Length: 603
Image (cartoon, rainbow, N blue to C red; front, side, top):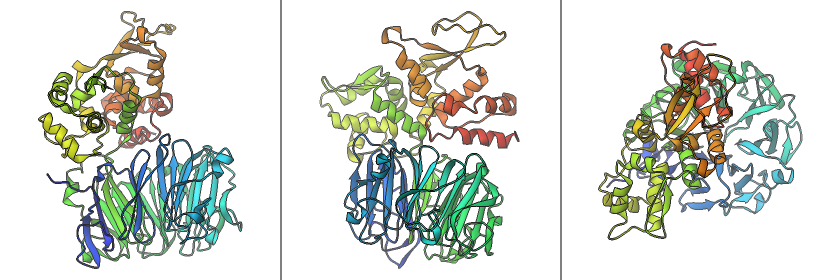
């Protein structure tokens, strides 16, 4: 059985974990020899030959040239939310709002983290500053030798090297985090691992601000003077911006509509002409960009059609020598391994380091994260699998959906004459609930016992199985009763009362509601076990059409509709759904609604 890698790279051959090292450079995407990369969530790259891989909720792996990988594990009560990198420093943000550091203090003496001068990537260390100041960190980004933190929802802090004023704190030194004073509340922050330029967006004015190194006009403020305090990028409203990323001499920006803009040095800005303001890149004008990554001098952009474009003076960035050293975008061929995933949304990921670029698959999405949490909570389980004394609560419908076997068949095949142990059962359930393959060999053994084909094809994923489950009305075990508001009659507060003719119903799987919506979780947790019901009334005053679209989104992570479905009403009624239904913070519902607005030219 083949074990295809989902991590490919191109650039310098000096990495010890690639499968081919014949030339000085890797002229095309080359598969890595790193095992079990199916669970990659994010890769961030530092200087030269080291990078950090986030795979599991509280585990990381660090790779360096000609060295064995290092493994790190955060405390069990901490779950990783994001990771970021500078040239020689890494930050880890956890869901609890805490920040952790991984740094080589011997290389960079001005590293902006407490205890960093004692670290040589030996262990992850907590950054205690924010806890001491009672600050909850919402997001982090890093420049080449600087760090930026968005705290308590809207407060901006920065630390590290203040080269060319990159911290936005004037002349001050910033080894420890210092507040960046801005008139309005900050909502988003952006930087680049290899740059000294920093960008952020504010809420009240929706303006894009920039500060730091601007010797090549890479701040987009119309000049080449570096900015030691935040300066408005005048030709952009922040509400239009999806992301900004900077290299040493260039900055690239993508809007929510997918347009790509560049500024800075002409060799690197994608326009081929020196520009000191953000300018639309002509070659990408008809493309909708969805991802962006920059290295020191190279840039990669991925479109919504999974087309990859790149430019920059960097040997080995492209798949043929003819495309090296391009100052305008050129289309880059994807490895054949990736072609079967091209129809899957939001799955291919890109990352740039200083001497290498990465292409990998992210098998996770908010749907799988929600299902993972459902498994870990063991709430609303309706059966068990395992041997006496080692039973594990599970959700029958999901197990049967993923295996196409009944629970009884699974129980007999796995726990018959020679039952598998609890560890192997958990290994199997991790694949069931979130596609994780933690032990490839044991999982294959389990599938052999079940007489199933081992799940290495793109057709056998959690996302596809849940989408198919949406069509399975026979297994749906719950009803949402939607009030028909033909008059102004007051609602009845009784959850279980159903007046004839006053309601329409939407059938759904209860475990989907519990996994996807905090509001429904609270409702189900509130109802006592003895009063448990298979129906619930909805009091949102939303139409049944909107709720049906939302429920389908719970299963598919996407929204598709025709003009006959009244898209204007759907968009209006679901505009607050993320907050009202308490959906995953990282869910793409708002971007899906924006897509519908664009499709039907809605205001």
